[in-house]
Length: 260
Image (cartoon, rainbow, N blue to C red; front, side):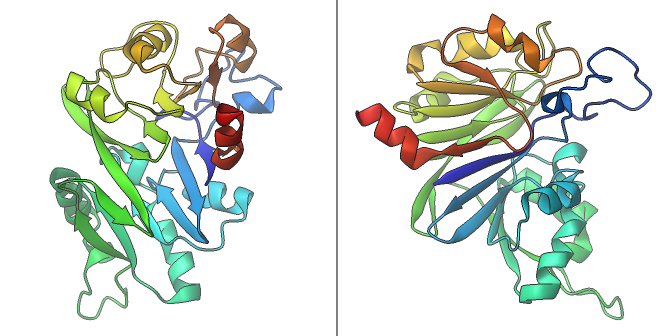
């Protein structure tokens, strides 16, 4: 299984529009952050996690040729507003892509992007996605996908675990029940917005504290703001890293290292 971090940035992206801070003007390409999203590849299948506002740019950068399924974490704009960019894949393979989310996220998507899911008379649009409501762990192309309920301030989001890997973006708390679902995870990507606290996201110390008992081998902090430079990674504990756009993780090689 191969993981690509398509976007590592928060809702504004980095550089942020109108900002001239040192990080927004940084020459370090790892400080150029598109909106948070993920690509998972295994057994000749490609699974997209969220359709970020920057999906077109991300797909071109990573030369993504097809998308076989989409997992949605929640329906906030930065995670779904690139949904129309799935049309390019449909023009080529003519297939309706299955997508998965919990009920309220699907309800919002179907209300805001009805043409993506339904054929409207005279519109000329063909449905792009087939909605599948998540109510429990499910199989996707032979792999078990475990939804992880997360608190996101006063709302919620859904993380996902596949094997030894889990992706937990946009969260400010993880319940004990959800922590149990993460037992044995070796590689974890988690929301770590910035150094300072935030009401709707883990800050860096909060993210590290939340998963301390899991003994994760490799923790990668994502959804980063312009208030943290990649060069500050050396302040993090051993085993904790900052995400960057285009970062790739080969879970097969990670497993070899773990078992060695």
